[in-house]
Amino acid sequence: MVQRQLPNPRELAELMRFKTPTLNPTDRRLEKALTIADLRVIAQRRTPKAPFDYTEGSAEAEISLARARQAFLDIEFHPSILRNVPEVDTSREVLGGPSALPFGIAPTGFTRMMQTEGEEAGAGAAGAAGIPFTLSTLGTTSIEGVRAANPNGRNWFQLYVMKQREISYGLAERAAAAGFDTLFFTVDTPVAGARLRDKRNGFSIPPQLTLGTVVNAIPRPAWWINFLTTPKLEFASLSSTGGTVGELLDSAMDPTISFDDLDVIREIWPGKIVVKGVQTVEDAKLLADRGVDGIVLSNHGGRQLDRAPVPFLLLRDVVREVGGDMEVHLDTGIMSGADIVASIALGARFTLVGRAYLYGLMAGGRRGVDRAIEILRNEIVRTMKLLEVATLDELQPKHVTQLTRLVPVARPVAAAAEQATDREPTRV
Image (cartoon, rainbow, N blue to C red; front, top):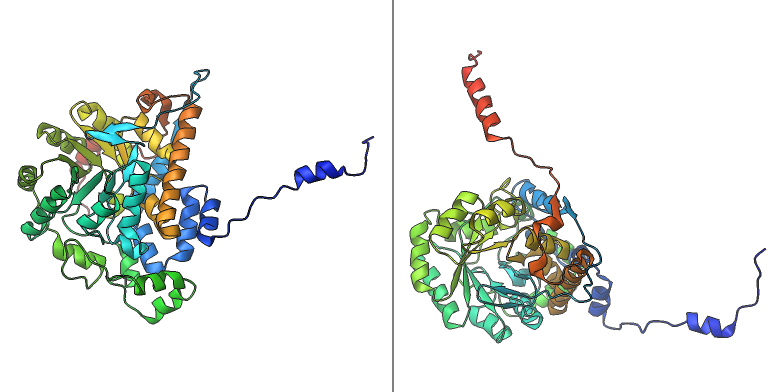
């Protein structure tokens, strides 16, 4: 029989300790976000459909992005035990300089479209966290503006080769003069991918007021107030901003980009050069032979060629072939600190996060970006402690198994099938 008694007032008093309420609504929202997925939910509530879909979406059927994210879900960690790891060191030397964490902010275009603080929020948060920030050629804050927002941190610049080459060369020279230490030469955008969400939404730069956008704005007045009461959007490289994103890219980009362009940029740029958008082992070898400082395995967040290779699945082969000659970085599909830890374990020197940072930006401006970085940091630290590794260098392939879901057909089998097809008589 359970013995019952009257409640003890002292014991009740111990239970009735209430948390001090957070009065600021932005801080209150962000405190509740425990994962990047939580930030995404907040971002979707606060951002009009067109700019949110521009961030969220990718090309055509969005298969590449879905596969990239699934590849990170299809991993199995193998923790060690009894290793005595009370603290972990998440810092990393990358491209000749320090980073407090094994990830940086990826280049994202039209960033002030998502939230008015844009690149300044990203650069400031990156500087405070001790990680690099990368400004896109299609950024909505100037090179000099990013430098002012992150005067003591590491700033990197992502460069597209434009049809008007002098624009690209001038941007590289400006970034060098502003103290940016690394240039990301992007090679996967000769033309724009088919971003169907943008077409269906009628998303243009700048956004146009239609009946649909007005209705969509009703529950999101803060976004429109910020957009209409802050300085006009300005682009580092485009003098004309009318039309859809795809139309703008097609008018500016050049499908004749070649290795000759890389050679010219290497003459112009005094710092480190990383080629972004590598998607095959063969191209990684070519770039290693040309002596670049690093590559980023990336399919542009799934926003260019749909059904492109999954960068995370390429990682081990590329690192095996060229990891001793140059740094191998990775982006596309990263949504958690565990994804980053898995990438480092399989040989990536560094990783980049794009959408994860933008969800934070849309959820709460600069404070939202700070929160996104904090979430990823906490997840990295926790995962490392559970794996019982004290430093990033201790992470090894033995800590991760990639579970197979997308298994390529073996080349000999594919060749035999092609020969059999060729032998079959044509049927009318």
